[in-house]
Image 1 (tube, rainbow, N blue to C red):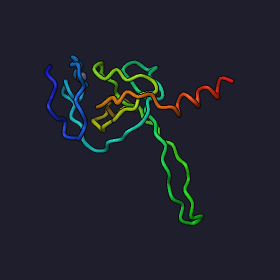
Image 2: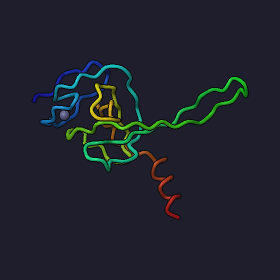
Image 3: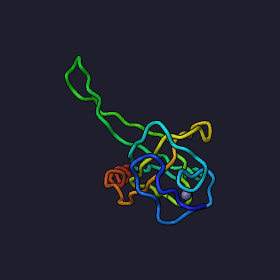
Length: 124
Ligand SMILES: [Zn+2]
């Protein structure tokens, strides 16, 4: 199927097409709702990317920020082929499985240093 010119959000289309029906660009999977940017933490489950990102939440009582982490599972279509450490943009879509309601819509490449550093620490 041909690449759509737009999927309704401000992201770049992938270079190569794919045949996946559950692809936001080449299949019949509409995206709507929330859009996040994060780092791929794991790609062990088939066609799946576990995407995480850190953020700060302000606690009024202590007038300080709390460091928080988010982690969601997203569908990883063949045309994205996101690997561990990649920066990706994910968009909300219909539930694809019990836990997957997001799909990778753009791969920004560029490995994130933070993930690598954390992994190194674990091993030693
Ligand atoms: Zn595709």
